[in-house]
Image (cartoon, rainbow, N blue to C red):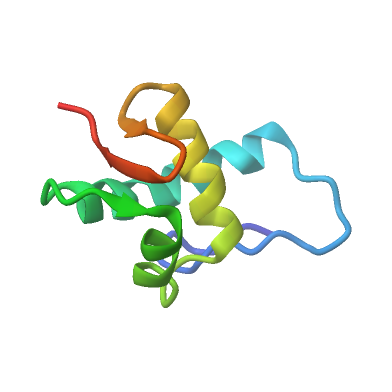
Length: 85
């Protein structure tokens, strides 16, 4: 059963999540990450996770940061992230 778009994505524990589910979760979380980094301040992963903790889980933010770094939307130095311009 799919959750409404405003609810955080929470996969069932112990279940394999399909790539479609992962893509949906990243699509749901990416706008919040991009908005946070939009002010141009370089942040650590820990800081980003803490800032979004009320809306998204740690795993959601981590996977989203990885996807955004791979696609070139954010720049990652190994310790810090910032928005690619």
